[in-house]
Length: 301
Image (tube, rainbow, N blue to C red):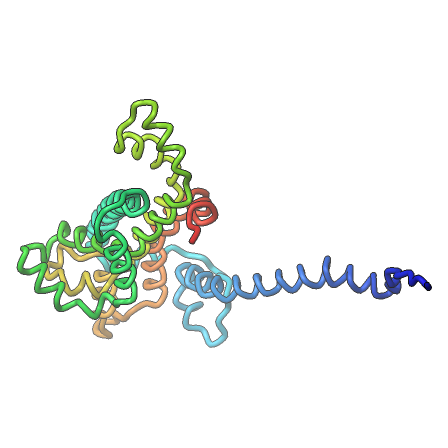
C-alpha cells in the first residue's frame, strides 16, 4: 500500500514580502488615513470658528479668505461681551440649570440602575423596557403636554422647574447604569453583607465606587445635552432674566440691525460661541480619563 506524504506548500518569497507589507504597512496606513480624514472633517469647522474669533473685520470679509490668522485680536470677544451685557447672568443661569440637572440625574440614574440590576420586584422588566421605548420618543413630540404639566405644577418660568424637567429624561442614563451594575459580580455585595453591611451600605461603599466611570459617562452626556438645549428652555421660560446662554446669544445677535452702522459681526458670533462651548470642552477634558474607562469597562450588553 502506497503512502502519500503531505507537505505544506512553500510560499514564494515575493508573496511572503507582499503579505508582510499588507499586514504591517498597508492596513495600518489605511486605517490611519481614514481616521485622520474623519478627524479633519469634524475639526476643521471648529478650527475655522476659533480662527474667525481672532480675526479682524478686514480679514473676515476679504475676497481671499485664509484659514489661519494674519493679525490676531481679541476685539471680537470684547464685541461679544458688549453686545451681550447680560452675558454673566446668562452664564450663571446655564451653570445653575446644567450642574443641577447633572447632579440630580446622575444620582437618580445610579439608584434606579442599581435597582433594575440587583433587586427583584413585580413588573421590573416591564418598567425597564417601557423606559427603553421612551428613548425613541422625541422630546419635541410631547412639548405641549410638558408645557401644560409644568404650568399646572407651577414649575414653568423658573430655573428649578428646568432642573426637574431635564432630570426627568432618565431612559438612557438608567440603561447605562444598569449595564454597569450588571457587569459587576454579586460576590462583592455578598462579601460586604457577610461583614455586616446592609443593602444600602453595600451599594454606597462597595458598588458606587466601582461604577464611577459609568456615572461620569451619564454626567457628561447630560452636561452636553442641557448646556446646548434651546427649544425646551425657550418654551418654558418667559422672563429674560432667567434665560440660559443659548437663548440669550440667539436673541442678542439676531436683533442686530444696520442702523447707525450696527450689524451682526461674524467674528463676534464666533467669539460668543467659543466662550459658550468652553465649559463643555473643559468638563470633558477634565473627566476624559474616567469617561473612557466607563465606556470600555462598564457598558457591556
